[in-house]
Length: 138
Image (cartoon, rainbow, N blue to C red):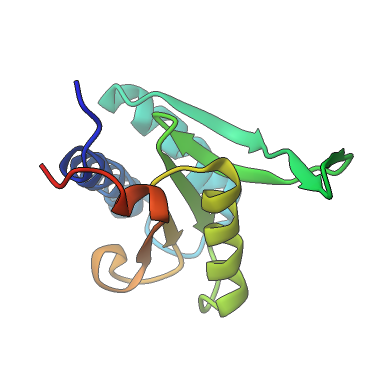
């Protein structure tokens, strides 16, 4: 199977659906780790392959730096999913998510804030990298 923008978008839809399912069940107001644990179960039920709390290697001037930087999820080795449960998403959250996407060289990232009333309309943002733009559309 050829990797395309369409496939990445369909995978995004599945991931977002899993997040919405968890949010419908739990609602807003819990700590991020609760949503994280429930999403691991939901991804298993959906048949999605994922890495949880993936340690991201940071290279500085050609050397790997000994630091612990982790993204919440890397799904199907294609999409970073960063979770928050905060009053408001700030630019630093967006920058963090986009940095993870770019360091891991994946086509897309999704930032989800579970501390909202409607996850679909106000609790998610997606970002695409240059790798996404290089893929065929269909």
